[in-house]
Image 1 (cartoon, rainbow, N blue to C red):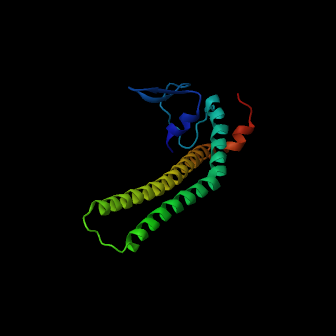
Image 2: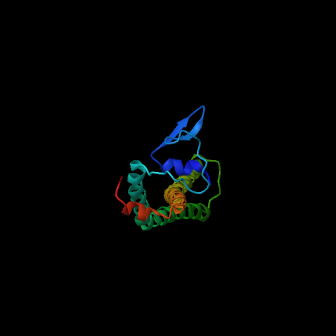
Image 3: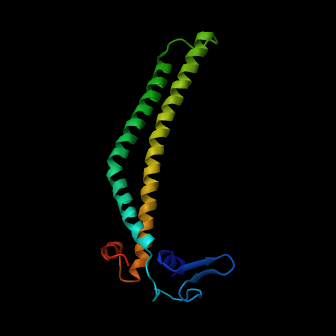
Length: 163
């Protein structure tokens, strides 16, 4: 077990560039295997937990909105690209290197780029949401993994009064 994970949750960690991580109570490097006998969870950590849980819940509630947004922007982008490409192939005259053909080709490319932009916006919003959700859930799992060594979990810890 990495002691730094435990010390990040404690009131008494001391960090020094020369010495590294030491305990503020014993002034020694942490030597415990699974759990620290002297750990006292910091108030800032206890205040962070409700914020973390609220952020997870907020991201869960946004899930439907994000998926609808992804679908809407994605469908608009695909429609623009498909209709633009279809109109290009429906045109009976061949490209004759005239100014009007050049403008038509340029307009077609611009519309395809606009469609691709809509697809990129859709993907970007979905990707940002999923990454944010994965990060906060991973943080919660990391904290719970450490708390399990003390026969605690986030809900039990939040149930205790701040000391």
